[in-house]
Image 1 (cartoon, rainbow, N blue to C red):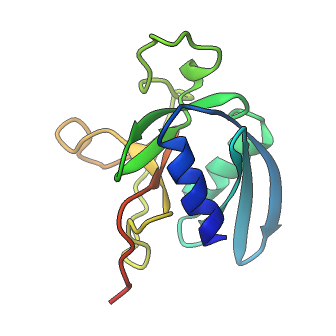
Image 2 (image 1 turned 45 degrees about the vertical axis):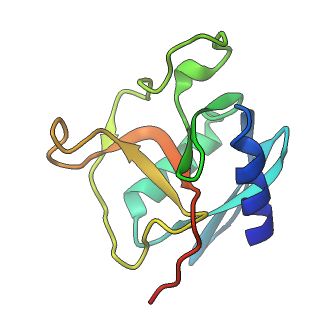
Image 3 (image 1 turned 60 degrees about the vertical axis):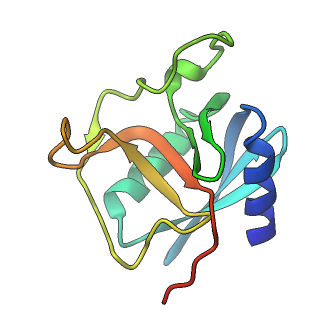
Amino acid sequence: MKKSVILFILIISLVNSSCFFSSLFKRNKETIVLINTGFGDIKVKLYKETPLHRENFIKLVSDKFYDSLLFHRVIKGFMIQGGDPDSKNAPADAILGNGGPGYTIPAEFNSKYFHKKGAIAAARRGDDVNPGKESSGSQFYIVQGKVFTNA
């Protein structure tokens, strides 16, 4: 799985890609979602310790909200970001990153899960305009960068 994530991130760093969230696997202790792209598949794990984010992501996947959306923001060595509904069928010169479903999700920070390479997280606006640290209702990112240990 890690090799698939790393390969996907390297490829996606080069170009934007539309994606389809087609499969929902287990929904017990772990929820795994499969993202299908033109460059291959990626599996993401959603944790039970962030139930509001997990249930929202599952709902959007089930509603096919993410189908055909682009990874609209790519910063090499940092992250790739998707989930902006305005990216569906967007022209190449479109300014993206401000779209969403019209709601935010309350913060659910958990120190057990940090921003290590391959982690998926909800995007949010900066603290100066978002003191509650609420997350976007649909935008997410996948962390790139160096591999760190839990120590």
